[in-house]
Amino acid sequence: MVIALFCNFTIDIVCLNGIAKIQIGGPAYYASLALNFMGEKSTLYTAIGKGIQKKKLKMLQRTNINLENIAFIDELPTPLFIHIYWDDKRKSYIYNETKLDEYYQNVKINEKDIYVSFTFREVKEDILYKLTQNKNCFLDMQGFLRYRNRYGLIKHKEPSIALDNFRYIKVSEEEIPNLKNLLQRAFSCSVEEVIVTRGARGVHVYSRKGIVYKLDLLNKNNNMRDPTGAGDVFGAIYFATRTKGASIPESIMKASLFASLKVNLGEHFGKRTIKNIMQLSKRQAFQKIKIDDFLI
Image (cartoon, rainbow, N blue to C red; front, side, top):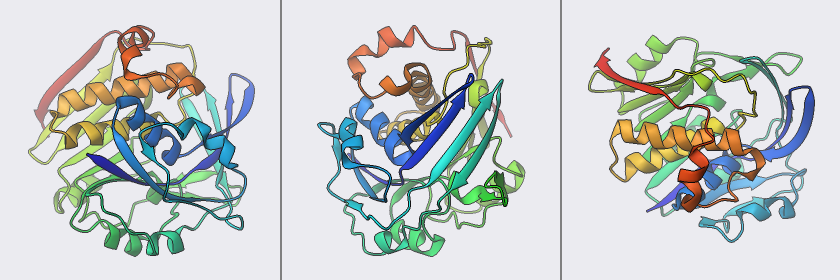
């Protein structure tokens, strides 16, 4: 199995515990590293603009990630995000919108499994619709829920993107304006599972069969770490495990573990291998979990 990644890179300024740092980020970075960490092969389809040098992608080399389809376009701006974290809250700002329509209009893919995650409407919905027809697709809706005010602060709105081609969709609880409306839309289309991540509090997965799978994190950990990219890691691992035939609870557990590893390992995520996972898991932020199944 080779997963095609339709994602973009970003430059992130992360402000945490009174310290600001600049780093490469975006779904393209975190999803591809997560799949490689898991031992899965992927092909990355994206274009990179100015601000990200090729040498910055060295962590992605000598991995299971096919980088041959990445285009480097000097005149293309790279999205700049500023993430400010305090307590359990976050504010995000975006500058430099990137349009990847031309790249994706000309891309040709052979993979049947596609993971889609953009940060701020980088691709028009009609182009994405054509590329995902008759495929097994996962959509992280974050980029299609966002708009910004005149200061660049990210706000959220009801999504208009067609969901017909997607088997799985993921949203963050803090970003979806009306979950009930989304569930009705999703299950009237081809969507089988709606994943709602809840940050450090866990995840809920709503199934077309009328079952909600809940993983609630019970212990409280006030040691603030950088959560940037954890949602991308969760989504990629969940999609890979479900596509390979794992159950929903098993996929939730594995994806949650990898997302927690990302938070705890920080910039070292991706430098380890799956062989380290049991040792590393002892450092995670949750020791007690609860999974409930019940009808919607």
